[in-house]
Length: 439
Image (cartoon, rainbow, N blue to C red; front, side, top):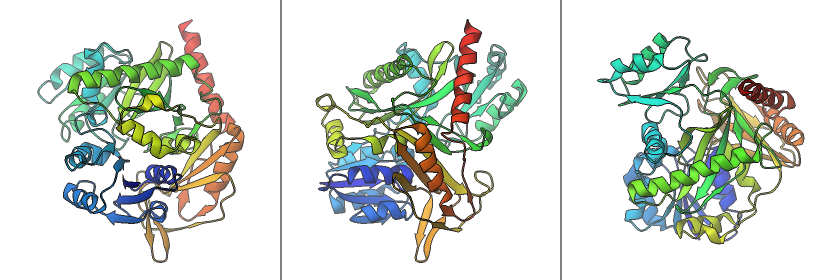
């Protein structure tokens, strides 16, 4: 079976690895940079821009894949699924219209409001012409969050108390956003613990993978600027220490209802990954945002645990018979830690060579924003290498991931605290204090 993979990050590296577990898979990859992990798993590859749809089309027509797997949000937002569908190639990934679930935060908030799906915070959407009324809306909330309406690489959202302090500053940021985006969303700030619930769907059936917690802040103890994600963890019982089974079920219910609402709204079935960024609050589970693909790093926490043939799962999504497959994931804990360039994210060193030492058994190494040159592997300006530990307990998985991260030498750093008991306990105490406030 020929499969076309689009994307060149660590997320796509783990997708490639999972697809290649089926020995009959011939993988062809379209990348924007030479990811050595993906290239080593590919029969052939093409380098190019995700916005160069003509080039993607020519490459797809040349290799004639059975299906395509779209890794990142950029090609989805550019309409690559629609393009491939026109030439008879099905995809794991939503059409441009359905990808608005991620590419337009206002579309998603309004969808939940229209179809009376629980999970929305109090919110309003403003354009330049309507921004004068934002001042009144801001007065209604204790604290707020300001979100650009569009893709921002995980770095455009600003939260009162973290990124700005006053309502005046919130309004200033709204003005700044509207210089580059058509709309800005202002929401009430939700207090709680966030988690990622990545779901596989054929548009009718929605199946959740284990919940994962990502860490956005650059430095130890959740300090520093936001990033694309410095690492993540999941637990062997397919919960998280601050989550109940009911919380996960409530999150899955929201996604099931959203999948149904998307079909009612567009007449199209969503085929791919619906990744809900959720937050458990004292008032239950709320929706932070949706992504229209696997998370990065969260893909690394779930795909290596999959016991099914991933190619079979993908075909079931395309043929809308996901109900005929029982998805099985190992009861293992995982910890993923990103090794990044010094100075990341604000002023990263660039084009520096890294050396990867011997990796112990049980660890996984996934290449992200690196470039393979004749004399070795070089960093770009973004996250470099994801180091994964898998074990029977979170403690053991953390130690494996930490040892792997320390084996990478160069002008780099990583967050040593991800997956540690100290940081996890901090999350648990935070959630307990919120629940006690409600009482």
